[in-house]
Picture 1: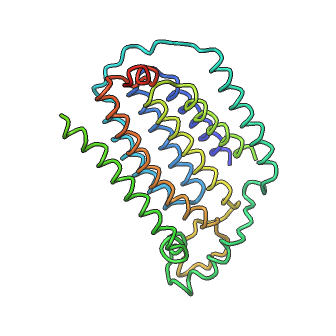
Picture 2: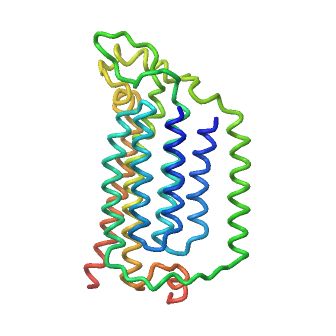
Picture 3: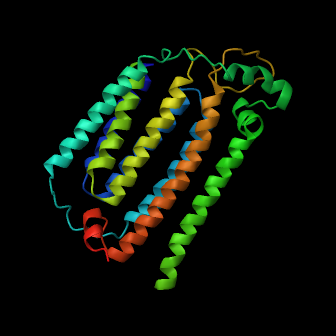
Length: 172
Length: 112
């Protein structure tokens, strides 16, 4: 999977650009580049449903983020280098990386998934749900309550957005 | 194994961005990067070498599929990520309208 390595490397570079560039609009567009790289990675990993969803969601979130940054006139970000804060963040990230390397060593090797539950779903999808797409059989049938919970979270977040934005209209 | 490490590095970039940057939009971007890394990690753990996408075919009897369970879970997670991003951006826009800045230090100083 050398192409996946290249793609992940490009995504990391895009993420660093999005983090370090000064202009907010450029930063948001760099984040979009990372998201579209993720779409390609999903295609390479044999997840076409996810690639489609990620593409749509990526476009929508780009539009939302550009709405937040367009017309924003910021004075140049003054570099207040609090050295203690910076050192704390670096130590925290380094600790996180070292622990995660230890945890990853315990996982099964890449390309060798155990599929303890997934194999059962694959075997039963045709008989129990008559769905050709096993992923949709799982989200709509085997784990329908998860999807119901997801719809609740989505609805709550939309209500939150409406509540936050409506207040501004009343005050203005 | 190296793919897992690269994925963790991507997560660490997002974490660093979230911790160090003072700009609210940069913090939202950091959270977005972390979300991408987590989604990718789940799909990586479900991958099987030389396997097909989990879609049944009428003629071909394919038996070797990638794991469909993480894909179903992440499909949910992507949509929730969009809603959370929209909520964060709405709050950031409201803060900008009130304080005319995205800098959290300025916002904290102007409180009250």
